[in-house]
Length: 548
Image (cartoon, rainbow, N blue to C red; front, side, top):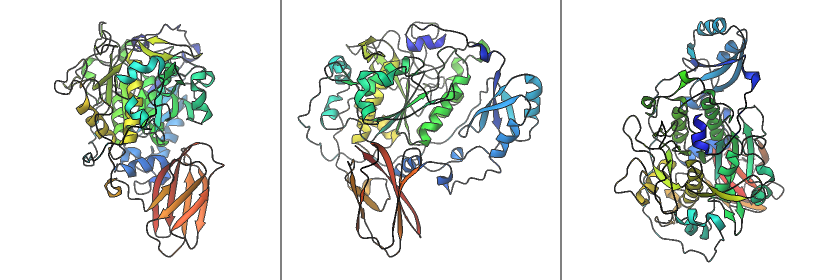
């Protein structure tokens, strides 16, 4: 199976009999006519965290953000023997399960006027223009490195190859950044001592299993746990991940027992969820080329970034402001030496693997894409990378499955230190620092990036793409926050504090606000929150805050 190329881990595979009587189909809708939602009122369908990212990086609300028309879902679900498994607002369709009489059920679905097609494999093209990038701001000064040093243990060289320790020593270790990890399972990560500090500080914001339909991701495959350790593990003298102070969403989208096209749609659902909860970074060490049902196999012609559903969704995630990274794959030397899906997506960072001497590993998948673009984009340590097993035992492992999260954590810290860059500019800037920038190729791309080659800039506030009219300090905070209003005008204001799921956890009403307002949030759990200030005349803006 193709996933063995990506995991490079010995797994025992079993068949799940309960799925034998079901067939899964993709149902594509023609439009979103009749939807009760409008682009002008995004708070009705996007969380404050998702809106905040779009506001900060000037990402417009797009028709793909609108939920699927509810009546379409109801009508499809009412067809006999059909169950809606999940819907995709980005691709405007639904994955359905048909238990018996699939031909009759499909005929009934296709007779609906708003349905444009149904199939086990639905390949189609979609072009969406990139959003405008904010202008690059010239570097002004380098903050002096602190005296803080860390004992990385076996992680030392993979950290040094990226010059990441320089950022860590200056305090940039991912604080306030949110990384969504989409994988096959995170077995026993909640019991693993290398994550003690992660769980103790509430650094796992939540979990979702899009394969089984629950929230327990700790009873499935071990692959995601090893991926997570590349970023989040801390055990001084043994292992330290590349973004040890970031917050994480752990999302299971891959079924390690099978290889079916539906897993791409699981991933799409996971990516939409990551966007909705306000993730900054999305990293995936998965890829697809061949399936158990060979009629669903991808071909090289599909690798154009706009044919495979998963690649389309990866591009959409990037165009909604997320920094998306994906493993190139481990197929070099096999019957499929090329990258897989969605590594062909044009707006993401595809990651290849190098060894301790910075040589490209023999297994790291190759570009170009079907339309001639260079892939991978960048490379990091994937040959004998240092990872943790489920009990906290650490060892060397091979695969772009590990070079991808190592780089994802590093790029998260880089973005934390350069918040005026949007996700596109983060990738472009790091390409320009990379070892192979002058002569990029289809084995190492632009090369190994240098996380401290770009001086950390002190940026004037007006340069930041954030029109909010208040300042929150300190941020991060421990208990008390102060809100400074840049302009005090007559009339009442409302201040709301949201968690990452969009639930309001605090509401304050000020009938005659002072220029500085103080609030005690000591009883909130550690993590990421959003503050919204609004008045009778203004819907207000959102700011992200972090409670330590």
